[in-house]
Image: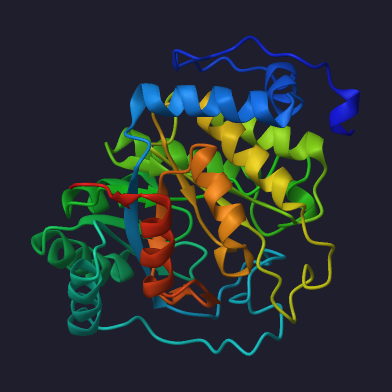
Length: 330
Protein backbone atom coordinates (compact mmCIF):
# COMPACT_ATOMS: atom_id res chain seq x y z
CA UNK A 1 0.00 0.00 0.00
CA UNK A 2 1.20 3.54 -0.77
CA UNK A 3 0.32 6.83 0.86
CA UNK A 4 -1.84 7.65 -2.14
CA UNK A 5 -3.98 4.58 -1.46
CA UNK A 6 -4.88 5.75 2.03
CA UNK A 7 -7.74 8.04 2.81
CA UNK A 8 -6.45 11.58 3.24
CA UNK A 9 -7.49 13.29 6.41
CA UNK A 10 -7.39 12.25 10.04
CA UNK A 11 -9.24 13.85 12.90
CA UNK A 12 -6.73 16.27 14.44
CA UNK A 13 -5.38 15.38 17.87
CA UNK A 14 -4.11 18.89 18.50
CA UNK A 15 -4.88 18.80 22.22
CA UNK A 16 -2.71 15.74 22.67
CA UNK A 17 -5.48 13.62 24.14
CA UNK A 18 -4.15 10.23 25.26
CA UNK A 19 -5.99 7.30 23.71
CA UNK A 20 -5.40 3.57 23.70
CA UNK A 21 -7.87 2.62 20.98
CA UNK A 22 -6.09 3.76 17.84
CA UNK A 23 -7.21 1.76 14.81
CA UNK A 24 -4.98 0.96 11.87
CA UNK A 25 -7.26 3.04 9.66
CA UNK A 26 -6.74 6.09 11.88
CA UNK A 27 -2.97 5.57 12.03
CA UNK A 28 -2.89 5.07 8.27
CA UNK A 29 -4.80 8.32 7.76
CA UNK A 30 -2.13 10.13 9.76
CA UNK A 31 0.63 8.69 7.59
CA UNK A 32 -1.32 9.87 4.53
CA UNK A 33 -1.61 13.50 5.61
CA UNK A 34 0.22 16.08 3.52
CA UNK A 35 3.64 16.50 5.12
CA UNK A 36 3.01 20.09 6.37
CA UNK A 37 -0.26 19.06 8.01
CA UNK A 38 1.33 16.01 9.66
CA UNK A 39 4.22 18.03 11.07
CA UNK A 40 1.82 20.74 12.27
CA UNK A 41 -0.28 18.19 14.16
CA UNK A 42 2.83 16.56 15.63
CA UNK A 43 4.15 19.95 16.79
CA UNK A 44 0.85 20.86 18.42
CA UNK A 45 0.72 17.57 20.29
CA UNK A 46 4.38 17.80 21.28
CA UNK A 47 3.95 21.29 22.69
CA UNK A 48 0.91 20.19 24.70
CA UNK A 49 3.11 17.79 26.70
CA UNK A 50 6.74 18.90 26.41
CA UNK A 51 9.02 21.87 25.99
CA UNK A 52 9.80 21.59 22.25
CA UNK A 53 13.35 22.85 22.80
CA UNK A 54 14.35 20.17 25.33
CA UNK A 55 15.87 16.79 24.43
CA UNK A 56 16.39 13.95 26.89
CA UNK A 57 19.94 12.59 26.66
CA UNK A 58 20.74 8.90 27.23
CA UNK A 59 23.89 6.84 26.85
CA UNK A 60 23.87 3.16 25.88
CA UNK A 61 26.55 0.66 26.89
CA UNK A 62 26.85 -2.97 25.79
CA UNK A 63 27.62 -4.78 29.04
CA UNK A 64 27.63 -8.21 27.38
CA UNK A 65 28.38 -8.28 23.66
CA UNK A 66 27.83 -10.99 21.05
CA UNK A 67 26.98 -14.67 21.19
CA UNK A 68 23.20 -14.19 21.17
CA UNK A 69 21.25 -17.31 20.12
CA UNK A 70 18.41 -15.30 18.56
CA UNK A 71 18.26 -14.88 14.78
CA UNK A 72 17.08 -11.24 14.53
CA UNK A 73 17.89 -10.43 10.90
CA UNK A 74 19.19 -6.94 11.71
CA UNK A 75 21.50 -7.85 14.58
CA UNK A 76 25.30 -8.20 14.32
CA UNK A 77 25.40 -9.89 17.73
CA UNK A 78 23.57 -13.03 16.57
CA UNK A 79 25.55 -16.29 16.46
CA UNK A 80 23.74 -17.05 13.19
CA UNK A 81 25.65 -14.40 11.21
CA UNK A 82 29.31 -13.72 10.48
CA UNK A 83 29.64 -10.02 11.29
CA UNK A 84 32.97 -9.91 13.06
CA UNK A 85 31.36 -9.34 16.46
CA UNK A 86 32.96 -11.69 18.98
CA UNK A 87 31.19 -13.05 22.05
CA UNK A 88 32.38 -11.41 25.24
CA UNK A 89 31.75 -11.98 28.91
CA UNK A 90 29.64 -9.70 31.08
CA UNK A 91 31.55 -6.54 31.99
CA UNK A 92 32.63 -6.06 35.57
CA UNK A 93 30.94 -3.59 37.88
CA UNK A 94 33.91 -1.21 38.17
CA UNK A 95 34.13 -0.75 34.39
CA UNK A 96 30.40 -0.18 34.02
CA UNK A 97 30.35 2.46 36.75
CA UNK A 98 33.31 4.25 35.19
CA UNK A 99 31.39 4.40 31.90
CA UNK A 100 28.31 5.69 33.73
CA UNK A 101 30.30 8.47 35.41
CA UNK A 102 31.70 9.54 32.05
CA UNK A 103 28.22 9.52 30.54
CA UNK A 104 26.90 11.76 33.32
CA UNK A 105 29.80 14.16 32.88
CA UNK A 106 28.99 14.32 29.15
CA UNK A 107 25.41 15.36 29.91
CA UNK A 108 23.48 12.09 29.97
CA UNK A 109 20.50 11.83 32.30
CA UNK A 110 19.81 8.15 31.69
CA UNK A 111 22.27 5.27 31.43
CA UNK A 112 21.13 2.25 29.45
CA UNK A 113 22.82 -1.16 29.63
CA UNK A 114 22.33 -3.88 27.04
CA UNK A 115 23.24 -7.57 27.18
CA UNK A 116 23.07 -9.94 24.21
CA UNK A 117 21.01 -12.66 25.84
CA UNK A 118 17.85 -14.46 24.78
CA UNK A 119 16.86 -14.36 28.44
CA UNK A 120 19.07 -13.76 31.48
CA UNK A 121 19.78 -16.61 33.86
CA UNK A 122 18.92 -15.87 37.45
CA UNK A 123 22.63 -15.86 38.37
CA UNK A 124 23.24 -13.19 35.71
CA UNK A 125 20.80 -10.90 37.48
CA UNK A 126 23.00 -10.71 40.57
CA UNK A 127 25.64 -8.78 38.64
CA UNK A 128 23.11 -6.72 36.66
CA UNK A 129 21.27 -5.72 39.82
CA UNK A 130 24.56 -4.51 41.33
CA UNK A 131 25.16 -2.42 38.20
CA UNK A 132 21.66 -0.92 38.40
CA UNK A 133 22.13 0.00 42.06
CA UNK A 134 25.55 1.50 41.36
CA UNK A 135 24.39 3.59 38.40
CA UNK A 136 21.34 4.73 40.35
CA UNK A 137 23.63 5.89 43.16
CA UNK A 138 25.41 8.19 40.69
CA UNK A 139 22.14 10.07 40.17
CA UNK A 140 21.33 8.65 36.74
CA UNK A 141 18.11 7.04 35.58
CA UNK A 142 18.67 3.38 34.81
CA UNK A 143 17.57 1.29 31.85
CA UNK A 144 18.49 -2.24 30.79
CA UNK A 145 17.69 -4.52 27.88
CA UNK A 146 18.40 -8.17 28.61
CA UNK A 147 15.96 -10.08 26.39
CA UNK A 148 12.89 -11.88 27.65
CA UNK A 149 12.01 -11.75 31.35
CA UNK A 150 9.87 -13.79 33.70
CA UNK A 151 7.63 -11.90 36.15
CA UNK A 152 9.97 -12.89 39.01
CA UNK A 153 13.01 -11.54 37.15
CA UNK A 154 11.20 -8.27 36.46
CA UNK A 155 10.43 -7.93 40.17
CA UNK A 156 14.11 -8.49 41.02
CA UNK A 157 15.15 -5.71 38.65
CA UNK A 158 12.56 -3.39 40.15
CA UNK A 159 13.91 -4.18 43.61
CA UNK A 160 17.40 -3.15 42.46
CA UNK A 161 16.05 0.26 41.48
CA UNK A 162 15.55 -0.16 37.72
CA UNK A 163 13.66 2.74 36.12
CA UNK A 164 13.19 1.52 32.52
CA UNK A 165 13.26 -1.79 30.68
CA UNK A 166 13.76 -1.80 26.92
CA UNK A 167 12.10 -4.52 24.87
CA UNK A 168 11.17 -3.49 21.34
CA UNK A 169 8.35 -4.98 19.27
CA UNK A 170 10.58 -4.30 16.21
CA UNK A 171 7.85 -4.32 13.54
CA UNK A 172 4.23 -5.24 12.88
CA UNK A 173 2.80 -8.58 14.04
CA UNK A 174 2.41 -9.62 10.39
CA UNK A 175 5.99 -8.89 9.32
CA UNK A 176 7.63 -10.12 12.50
CA UNK A 177 8.30 -13.68 11.31
CA UNK A 178 10.22 -12.30 8.33
CA UNK A 179 12.69 -10.77 10.78
CA UNK A 180 12.82 -13.18 13.76
CA UNK A 181 11.96 -16.85 14.13
CA UNK A 182 13.52 -17.72 17.50
CA UNK A 183 10.90 -15.97 19.60
CA UNK A 184 7.31 -14.96 18.95
CA UNK A 185 5.54 -11.63 19.01
CA UNK A 186 3.57 -12.88 21.99
CA UNK A 187 6.85 -13.59 23.81
CA UNK A 188 7.67 -9.92 23.48
CA UNK A 189 4.24 -8.84 24.69
CA UNK A 190 4.52 -11.22 27.67
CA UNK A 191 7.81 -9.59 28.70
CA UNK A 192 6.28 -6.13 28.41
CA UNK A 193 3.40 -7.27 30.63
CA UNK A 194 5.84 -8.63 33.23
CA UNK A 195 7.81 -5.38 33.22
CA UNK A 196 4.69 -3.25 33.56
CA UNK A 197 3.29 -5.46 36.35
CA UNK A 198 6.56 -5.06 38.27
CA UNK A 199 6.18 -1.29 38.24
CA UNK A 200 9.05 -0.61 35.82
CA UNK A 201 8.69 2.00 33.09
CA UNK A 202 8.55 0.54 29.60
CA UNK A 203 10.89 1.50 26.75
CA UNK A 204 9.48 -0.05 23.58
CA UNK A 205 9.57 0.89 19.92
CA UNK A 206 10.75 -0.59 16.67
CA UNK A 207 12.95 -0.50 13.59
CA UNK A 208 12.02 0.82 10.16
CA UNK A 209 13.81 0.32 6.87
CA UNK A 210 13.88 -3.50 7.15
CA UNK A 211 12.01 -4.03 3.90
CA UNK A 212 8.65 -3.69 5.59
CA UNK A 213 5.67 -2.12 3.85
CA UNK A 214 3.86 1.05 4.84
CA UNK A 215 1.15 -1.25 6.21
CA UNK A 216 3.76 -2.74 8.55
CA UNK A 217 4.85 0.67 9.83
CA UNK A 218 1.19 1.48 10.40
CA UNK A 219 0.72 -1.84 12.21
CA UNK A 220 3.74 -1.30 14.45
CA UNK A 221 2.62 2.17 15.57
CA UNK A 222 -1.00 1.04 16.00
CA UNK A 223 0.15 -1.86 18.21
CA UNK A 224 2.30 0.39 20.40
CA UNK A 225 -0.38 3.08 20.66
CA UNK A 226 -3.04 0.52 21.61
CA UNK A 227 -1.15 -1.02 24.54
CA UNK A 228 -3.03 -0.65 27.85
CA UNK A 229 -0.39 1.89 28.87
CA UNK A 230 1.80 3.64 26.32
CA UNK A 231 5.54 3.00 26.65
CA UNK A 232 7.07 5.89 28.55
CA UNK A 233 9.91 5.80 26.01
CA UNK A 234 9.43 4.92 22.32
CA UNK A 235 12.69 4.44 20.37
CA UNK A 236 12.25 4.67 16.62
CA UNK A 237 15.28 3.13 14.94
CA UNK A 238 16.40 3.39 11.34
CA UNK A 239 17.95 0.10 10.28
CA UNK A 240 21.74 0.11 10.35
CA UNK A 241 22.75 -2.24 7.55
CA UNK A 242 25.53 -4.37 9.00
CA UNK A 243 27.56 -6.56 6.61
CA UNK A 244 26.95 -10.22 7.31
CA UNK A 245 23.35 -9.81 8.44
CA UNK A 246 20.44 -10.77 6.14
CA UNK A 247 19.36 -7.12 5.93
CA UNK A 248 22.73 -5.76 4.86
CA UNK A 249 21.85 -5.13 1.22
CA UNK A 250 18.29 -3.80 1.22
CA UNK A 251 17.21 -0.46 -0.23
CA UNK A 252 17.38 2.34 2.36
CA UNK A 253 14.17 3.94 3.58
CA UNK A 254 13.29 7.40 2.27
CA UNK A 255 14.27 9.83 5.06
CA UNK A 256 10.91 11.59 4.83
CA UNK A 257 9.15 8.26 5.46
CA UNK A 258 11.24 7.96 8.61
CA UNK A 259 10.24 11.47 9.69
CA UNK A 260 6.59 10.57 9.08
CA UNK A 261 6.99 7.58 11.40
CA UNK A 262 8.37 9.84 14.14
CA UNK A 263 5.47 12.27 13.69
CA UNK A 264 2.80 9.56 13.83
CA UNK A 265 4.40 8.07 16.94
CA UNK A 266 4.29 11.52 18.57
CA UNK A 267 0.61 12.10 17.72
CA UNK A 268 -0.57 8.67 18.84
CA UNK A 269 1.56 8.52 22.01
CA UNK A 270 1.50 12.16 23.12
CA UNK A 271 3.12 11.87 26.56
CA UNK A 272 5.84 9.38 25.62
CA UNK A 273 9.47 10.24 25.01
CA UNK A 274 9.98 9.54 21.30
CA UNK A 275 13.63 8.66 20.86
CA UNK A 276 15.50 9.28 17.64
CA UNK A 277 17.57 6.15 18.00
CA UNK A 278 19.76 3.95 15.77
CA UNK A 279 20.71 5.15 12.31
CA UNK A 280 21.54 8.76 13.13
CA UNK A 281 25.12 8.23 11.95
CA UNK A 282 23.77 7.97 8.40
CA UNK A 283 21.24 10.81 8.70
CA UNK A 284 21.91 14.33 7.53
CA UNK A 285 21.60 17.17 10.00
CA UNK A 286 18.53 18.26 8.06
CA UNK A 287 16.82 14.88 8.51
CA UNK A 288 17.55 14.93 12.23
CA UNK A 289 16.22 18.48 12.47
CA UNK A 290 12.97 17.37 10.82
CA UNK A 291 12.73 14.50 13.30
CA UNK A 292 12.97 16.94 16.22
CA UNK A 293 10.36 19.11 14.51
CA UNK A 294 8.17 16.01 14.16
CA UNK A 295 8.26 15.38 17.90
CA UNK A 296 11.41 13.39 18.69
CA UNK A 297 12.70 14.51 22.08
CA UNK A 298 15.29 11.95 23.09
CA UNK A 299 18.61 10.76 21.67
CA UNK A 300 21.55 8.58 22.61
CA UNK A 301 24.85 10.38 23.20
CA UNK A 302 28.06 8.48 22.62
CA UNK A 303 30.15 6.89 19.86
CA UNK A 304 28.32 3.53 19.76
CA UNK A 305 24.88 1.99 20.13
CA UNK A 306 25.83 -1.45 21.45
CA UNK A 307 27.92 -2.40 18.38
CA UNK A 308 26.88 0.08 15.67
CA UNK A 309 28.17 3.65 15.17
CA UNK A 310 26.50 6.72 16.62
CA UNK A 311 27.36 10.40 16.06
CA UNK A 312 30.07 11.78 18.31
CA UNK A 313 28.84 13.76 21.31
CA UNK A 314 30.57 16.87 19.94
CA UNK A 315 28.56 16.59 16.71
CA UNK A 316 25.34 16.26 18.68
CA UNK A 317 26.13 19.29 20.81
CA UNK A 318 26.88 21.34 17.71
CA UNK A 319 23.66 20.29 16.02
CA UNK A 320 21.58 20.94 19.13
CA UNK A 321 23.21 24.34 19.44
CA UNK A 322 22.39 25.20 15.84
CA UNK A 323 18.77 24.18 16.44
CA UNK A 324 18.46 25.95 19.80
CA UNK A 325 17.86 22.69 21.63
CA UNK A 326 19.06 21.97 25.14
CA UNK A 327 19.37 18.85 27.31
CA UNK A 328 16.27 18.07 29.31
CA UNK A 329 16.65 18.87 33.00
CA UNK A 330 16.68 15.89 35.36
